[in-house]
Image (cartoon, rainbow, N blue to C red; front, side, top):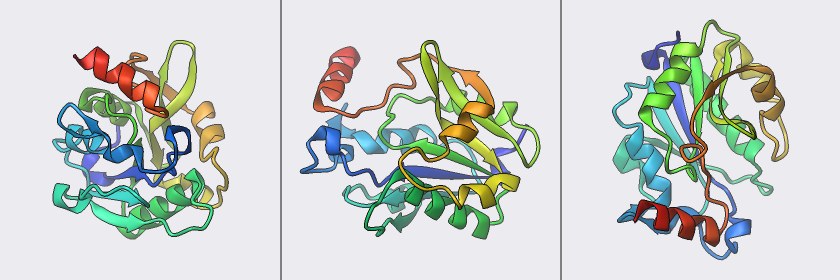
Length: 194
Protein backbone atom coordinates (compact mmCIF):
# COMPACT_ATOMS: atom_id res chain seq x y z
CA UNK A 1 0.00 0.00 0.00
CA UNK A 2 1.16 3.51 -0.82
CA UNK A 3 -0.42 6.22 1.31
CA UNK A 4 -2.34 9.01 -0.38
CA UNK A 5 -0.47 11.43 1.88
CA UNK A 6 2.74 10.44 0.08
CA UNK A 7 1.21 10.54 -3.41
CA UNK A 8 0.87 13.46 -5.81
CA UNK A 9 -2.26 13.60 -7.96
CA UNK A 10 -1.81 14.80 -11.53
CA UNK A 11 -4.95 15.57 -13.53
CA UNK A 12 -4.18 15.66 -17.24
CA UNK A 13 -6.41 18.35 -18.75
CA UNK A 14 -4.32 19.62 -21.67
CA UNK A 15 -5.72 17.57 -24.56
CA UNK A 16 -6.49 19.23 -27.86
CA UNK A 17 -10.04 17.77 -28.14
CA UNK A 18 -9.42 16.89 -31.80
CA UNK A 19 -12.00 14.09 -31.90
CA UNK A 20 -14.45 16.46 -30.22
CA UNK A 21 -14.10 18.93 -33.08
CA UNK A 22 -11.04 20.79 -31.84
CA UNK A 23 -12.73 24.21 -31.79
CA UNK A 24 -13.24 24.25 -28.04
CA UNK A 25 -12.07 22.22 -25.08
CA UNK A 26 -14.42 19.34 -24.41
CA UNK A 27 -13.56 19.70 -20.71
CA UNK A 28 -15.60 22.91 -20.57
CA UNK A 29 -18.74 21.19 -21.88
CA UNK A 30 -21.54 20.90 -19.31
CA UNK A 31 -22.29 17.57 -17.69
CA UNK A 32 -24.80 17.31 -14.84
CA UNK A 33 -24.57 21.03 -14.09
CA UNK A 34 -20.80 21.49 -14.10
CA UNK A 35 -17.93 21.23 -16.59
CA UNK A 36 -17.00 17.75 -17.73
CA UNK A 37 -13.37 18.25 -16.68
CA UNK A 38 -14.30 19.21 -13.14
CA UNK A 39 -15.94 15.88 -12.29
CA UNK A 40 -12.72 13.93 -11.56
CA UNK A 41 -11.30 16.83 -9.52
CA UNK A 42 -14.40 16.95 -7.32
CA UNK A 43 -14.63 13.15 -7.06
CA UNK A 44 -11.08 12.92 -5.71
CA UNK A 45 -11.35 15.94 -3.40
CA UNK A 46 -11.79 13.77 -0.29
CA UNK A 47 -8.58 11.78 -0.76
CA UNK A 48 -5.75 13.43 1.22
CA UNK A 49 -3.11 13.53 -1.53
CA UNK A 50 0.26 15.10 -0.70
CA UNK A 51 -0.31 17.61 -3.52
CA UNK A 52 -2.54 18.09 -6.57
CA UNK A 53 -1.78 19.59 -9.96
CA UNK A 54 -3.80 20.03 -13.13
CA UNK A 55 -1.88 20.15 -16.39
CA UNK A 56 -3.92 22.45 -18.65
CA UNK A 57 -3.82 24.03 -22.08
CA UNK A 58 -7.15 25.37 -23.36
CA UNK A 59 -9.87 24.63 -20.84
CA UNK A 60 -11.32 27.46 -18.77
CA UNK A 61 -11.89 25.48 -15.57
CA UNK A 62 -10.51 27.16 -12.44
CA UNK A 63 -8.71 24.16 -10.99
CA UNK A 64 -6.85 26.40 -8.52
CA UNK A 65 -10.18 27.09 -6.79
CA UNK A 66 -10.36 23.34 -6.15
CA UNK A 67 -6.95 23.04 -4.51
CA UNK A 68 -4.85 22.25 -7.57
CA UNK A 69 -1.59 23.81 -8.64
CA UNK A 70 -2.16 24.76 -12.28
CA UNK A 71 0.60 23.98 -14.76
CA UNK A 72 0.15 25.14 -18.34
CA UNK A 73 1.43 22.84 -21.06
CA UNK A 74 3.00 25.23 -23.58
CA UNK A 75 4.66 22.48 -25.60
CA UNK A 76 4.07 23.03 -29.32
CA UNK A 77 3.09 19.39 -29.80
CA UNK A 78 1.26 19.15 -26.46
CA UNK A 79 1.06 15.37 -26.62
CA UNK A 80 0.10 13.27 -23.62
CA UNK A 81 3.74 12.53 -22.79
CA UNK A 82 4.57 16.24 -22.58
CA UNK A 83 1.81 16.72 -20.01
CA UNK A 84 2.94 13.64 -18.13
CA UNK A 85 6.54 14.90 -18.04
CA UNK A 86 5.37 18.23 -16.60
CA UNK A 87 3.39 16.40 -13.93
CA UNK A 88 6.23 14.04 -13.03
CA UNK A 89 8.72 16.89 -12.68
CA UNK A 90 6.25 18.73 -10.45
CA UNK A 91 5.56 15.61 -8.32
CA UNK A 92 9.30 15.05 -7.90
CA UNK A 93 9.71 18.66 -6.73
CA UNK A 94 6.95 18.03 -4.15
CA UNK A 95 8.93 15.12 -2.69
CA UNK A 96 6.15 12.67 -3.57
CA UNK A 97 6.78 8.96 -3.14
CA UNK A 98 4.29 8.13 -5.89
CA UNK A 99 2.26 9.75 -8.63
CA UNK A 100 -1.38 9.08 -9.45
CA UNK A 101 -2.27 10.07 -13.01
CA UNK A 102 -5.94 10.74 -13.76
CA UNK A 103 -7.54 12.04 -16.95
CA UNK A 104 -9.89 15.00 -16.85
CA UNK A 105 -12.06 13.47 -19.57
CA UNK A 106 -12.96 10.47 -17.38
CA UNK A 107 -15.86 11.93 -15.36
CA UNK A 108 -17.10 8.66 -13.85
CA UNK A 109 -14.04 7.51 -11.91
CA UNK A 110 -14.71 6.93 -8.23
CA UNK A 111 -12.72 7.66 -5.12
CA UNK A 112 -13.22 4.02 -4.06
CA UNK A 113 -11.44 2.80 -7.18
CA UNK A 114 -8.55 5.22 -6.69
CA UNK A 115 -8.20 4.01 -3.10
CA UNK A 116 -7.99 0.43 -4.43
CA UNK A 117 -5.15 1.51 -6.72
CA UNK A 118 -3.29 2.97 -3.73
CA UNK A 119 -3.93 -0.20 -1.71
CA UNK A 120 -2.57 -2.40 -4.52
CA UNK A 121 0.70 -0.46 -4.87
CA UNK A 122 3.85 -1.61 -3.12
CA UNK A 123 7.27 -0.01 -3.25
CA UNK A 124 9.00 2.64 -5.27
CA UNK A 125 8.82 0.64 -8.50
CA UNK A 126 5.06 0.10 -8.32
CA UNK A 127 2.87 0.46 -11.39
CA UNK A 128 -0.84 -0.05 -10.83
CA UNK A 129 -3.39 0.76 -13.53
CA UNK A 130 -7.11 0.47 -14.09
CA UNK A 131 -8.62 -2.33 -16.16
CA UNK A 132 -12.01 -3.45 -17.38
CA UNK A 133 -13.14 -6.43 -19.43
CA UNK A 134 -12.18 -6.23 -23.08
CA UNK A 135 -10.12 -3.05 -22.84
CA UNK A 136 -6.41 -2.49 -22.32
CA UNK A 137 -5.25 -1.15 -18.95
CA UNK A 138 -5.47 2.61 -18.60
CA UNK A 139 -5.46 5.53 -16.17
CA UNK A 140 -6.11 6.24 -13.47
CA UNK A 141 -2.69 4.78 -12.89
CA UNK A 142 -0.18 4.97 -10.07
CA UNK A 143 3.62 5.06 -10.46
CA UNK A 144 6.15 4.73 -7.66
CA UNK A 145 8.95 7.27 -7.31
CA UNK A 146 11.60 4.91 -8.72
CA UNK A 147 9.90 5.24 -12.12
CA UNK A 148 9.87 9.06 -12.24
CA UNK A 149 13.14 9.17 -14.20
CA UNK A 150 11.80 6.78 -16.82
CA UNK A 151 8.52 8.69 -17.10
CA UNK A 152 10.48 11.88 -17.78
CA UNK A 153 11.94 10.29 -20.94
CA UNK A 154 8.60 9.40 -22.55
CA UNK A 155 7.44 11.00 -25.81
CA UNK A 156 4.33 10.84 -27.98
CA UNK A 157 0.68 10.16 -27.31
CA UNK A 158 1.24 6.66 -26.00
CA UNK A 159 2.56 8.09 -22.76
CA UNK A 160 3.21 5.36 -20.23
CA UNK A 161 1.22 2.69 -22.07
CA UNK A 162 3.98 0.05 -22.01
CA UNK A 163 4.62 0.57 -18.30
CA UNK A 164 0.90 0.39 -17.58
CA UNK A 165 0.47 -2.84 -19.54
CA UNK A 166 3.35 -4.49 -17.67
CA UNK A 167 2.14 -3.39 -14.23
CA UNK A 168 -0.47 -4.61 -11.81
CA UNK A 169 -4.11 -3.98 -12.66
CA UNK A 170 -7.18 -3.24 -10.59
CA UNK A 171 -10.57 -3.90 -12.13
CA UNK A 172 -13.31 -1.32 -12.49
CA UNK A 173 -16.51 -1.33 -14.48
CA UNK A 174 -16.34 -0.17 -18.12
CA UNK A 175 -18.77 2.63 -17.24
CA UNK A 176 -16.47 3.91 -14.50
CA UNK A 177 -13.51 4.01 -16.88
CA UNK A 178 -15.38 5.64 -19.75
CA UNK A 179 -13.56 8.54 -21.34
CA UNK A 180 -15.21 11.22 -23.40
CA UNK A 181 -13.59 11.67 -26.80
CA UNK A 182 -16.46 12.75 -29.07
CA UNK A 183 -19.72 14.69 -28.81
CA UNK A 184 -21.53 11.36 -29.23
CA UNK A 185 -19.69 9.97 -26.17
CA UNK A 186 -20.82 12.97 -24.12
CA UNK A 187 -24.41 12.72 -25.37
CA UNK A 188 -24.50 9.02 -24.46
CA UNK A 189 -23.21 9.73 -20.96
CA UNK A 190 -25.76 12.51 -20.48
CA UNK A 191 -28.55 10.10 -21.46
CA UNK A 192 -27.14 7.46 -19.09
CA UNK A 193 -27.01 9.96 -16.22
CA UNK A 194 -30.58 11.02 -16.93
